[in-house]
Length: 84
Image 1 (tube, rainbow, N blue to C red):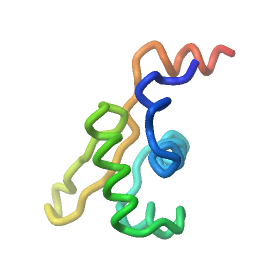
Image 2: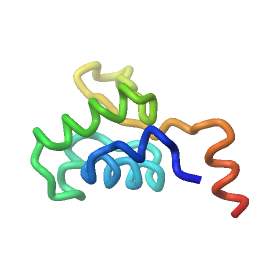
Image 3: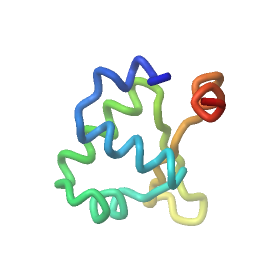
Image 4: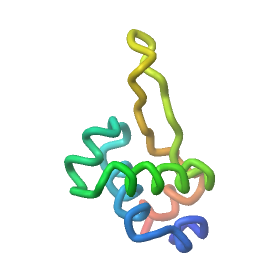
């Protein structure tokens, strides 16, 4: 079952979301490097994914300038997908 919020996302946002589902946590620079997308495109996609509640941002406690983008487990949705 596909998350309804993801069905209206841009292809770039879907690509980043799928990557975070696999990796769970990534930094912006790593997302840019692995997707080959521009920084602006990645930031726009991350903004959309955050607003729909699909991912969240965690601040590094040892260096508050560093942010980590984290896959947010959707209760019930991921469980159903893993059962299929």
